Image 1 (cartoon, each protein chain N blue to C red):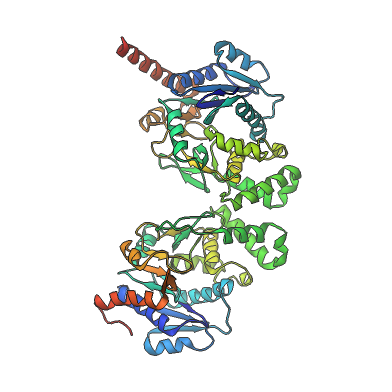
Image 2 (cartoon, each protein chain N blue to C red):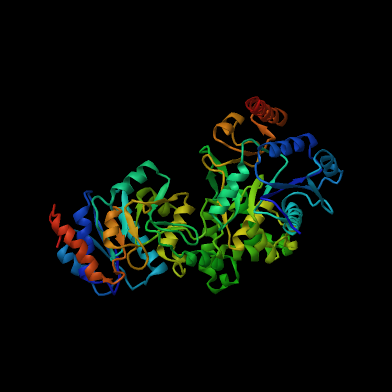
Length: 303
Length: 291
């Protein structure tokens, strides 16, 4: 029988992962999430990192990938395997995909997302919604989104298609169909952290897009591919990042200083790798201190 | 204002009258007469202060209209200086004070905007009244005509279109986005840039199966300009492709100043719609109507 959860969390980890940082991200999830959830580690490290995590967190499920397929479309294939497993084993409302360089920094982002998807069942995937050549983030800064736009056009509509004919022809067919369903070229939900509804994942599975094996060599990220496929199966992409909405994510480094992220009420941030002169160690220490401080305050209140 | 063989002089005069009545700016009216029966001369008898540009042969709508309009815009650039050029169909109508005010302000504050009006984006965008627009046509036409085997059906025009589309795309153009052609404003800067780029007109586009509005919007993006919104909420455009987007009363409540198309609204015919708005002009008489 399927075990029932509000949320399934999938965290892929690769060969270069840092176990301390993964531990820190898992601790942040445990500290701030209030819903019933199941954490799945998709272990693509091929050096036993998953087993190591399992020793410390026995409640975590570890799925080992058969072989390391790298990032981009390779990650898409591996993630689809994890999403299929989640669908088969668990009954859940939402799935959160979170990178090991993302962090939970505020209380209840899971509840915010559950509420959001409840109110908008037409949304299949939500997070930092990126559209157009440039878009404006929650701080009013212009963010460049030209890469997936150019890649899609070049690989599906120019002679460059023949560089990877099978993958690009498959992509072209999906891309053209998606345009008819209202897909805007290059629009996507950034892959550092995003939520997907079970209904959307079921539709993707029915349409045999979990995964489309022919896409394994396309030059697009898993987030670009899953966003395109989400539109293709008739769902919308949702925004959980503008204004004071809970996601404070961007591709490289943090989108703002830790203080600003806190002040803006951001609850899931990505990437912890850097912020200006701060390195990952310092960023994580900042938020860890915050958790300890809050924890101590709560203990004092209880006592 | 472009007029064709099926245009009705009474309606053309009514539209000109509405513009003259409500606008406070110094302006010049140019009529592109594509009627092939000297309709514009008939109009000039009632409104002497207009320029008439007669076309040699009827070019139809779509890209033919694009060529005629581009020639007219070229004429306007050569003969006048202006803050904004208003393109208005003969089934559009001005129903509010200073319809040009917001456009001139928008172009001044945002010189990167070249064309403004009802900015249509996406597959089914909604207008101020909650109506869904089906924007499938330009999206599909562009994609199929420039990136599939159907390209070969009209190789010359589709090749030209493909080059433009890719250039525009890399400037941030979203497939199928445009400013609706029933009525829109273009800045002089935009027209100058289009002229410099050789797009006034680009004759190779004459067989394109896209509307003039799709083509002007695309070429505006090619020359690095943006499309502006003057239709959402209470902004002045209340336009739709066929018929009005809302009842005459609702258009007034939303402070709409330029509406399209006066052809119909539910059971109301064009005569009734026009007389409804004309009665307001007569009631609020402040200047001398043209006719």
